[in-house]
Image (tube, rainbow, N blue to C red; front, side):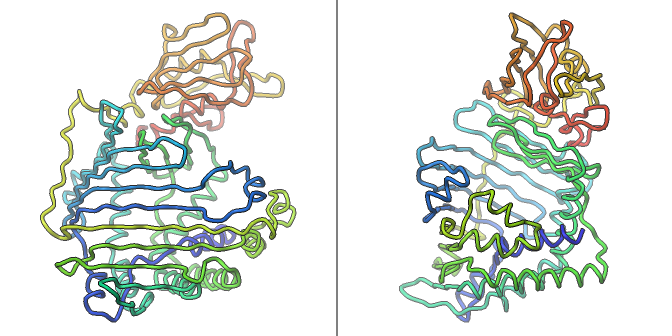
Length: 508
């Protein structure tokens, strides 16, 4: 447990950033502290690898080409002052050099005012699809409990106190003003000191979360881990025996985390350990160069009403990955041999990455119209219905066989137990084709003596999944490896398999 908390704290210190800033200028300070309940916005977030050696790319098997990723957002939101109700509509486009742009429209309709009948609906649509993908989290009490827990944490008195302290102390730095632009530059040391202060001041917020992550990670390490297919390939499922959260993606629910609820009672011993871990990791990382001299930059202009008009923020990473790994290796159990096997050396691992966020805001706290499409049975697909279809059996029990050192599943028996009839299974000259409706998979094709499966989804997309060993015929029956079950969203538990997606949605 101590090793796990140590790891989580180190990651939090590396990745944390402050979201509130302050300055002596009254107008700037007031704008940065203003609570925003509605706005129209345009935002571009870019990640650009500006420097990386060819040897480093080769060591990590990174393909040649420009390493840049842009996310372009445009939308509007309107939220109640207590934060319990919100409507948001947004267009998002992901741009990768040399690849076709990926665009999607997203909508969120949330109202947690009525605790007896909360509403949380996400709607997603890509330009080349005819129908909306609808994820109505309100269908599951378990999911709504998790959403409510996250909401309560975000609006807690502890969180509001932390934000106020950040505004008034942690990131205090007077901006320079020129031609209508307020500019602030934070050095690497200022950022390291601020993150340390943030972690210590936010103890009552971060400690329960980090403890929960540590428990969840330790549980996952001893639990089954499998994959469930999506339109763009397999995605992870991490399981334990406790509460569940489903995270939606552009092509439907992509990640299912079944993890413990947040710990509410923190002991004095855990607090002392947390503070000691923060101090220890601060000292470790304080000895490593992580950022450029201008670690974080921010330029702000104000609109006519005194609210923020534009905000341009940059994070400039400039480090040597070998130095960083070496500094943390002792605490994370990484040996010199482990580092050597990666091919990373001090000479080849200098890396500079620029992360920028450019935002334009209009009509802050004004009357903002948010258009959410009307959903009907004809124009939409209920994503959760596909994932938790009643006909999808919760548990599958089949007898396995040993063959060439591998444990194999009888394909037809497994499919029958999962609710697929023999009429939907066909065999033709070494090729097995199965029609189904399980966890987003509508059909799959298996070729005997080949270790790949062709998978189709509801949108007609196809992908090829690799399995650990080729499908074989034994005594006129087709057998496949366990990872075939994982493609369909089933995880193994002792001598049976269970539908992880159904479990994640609260179907018992």
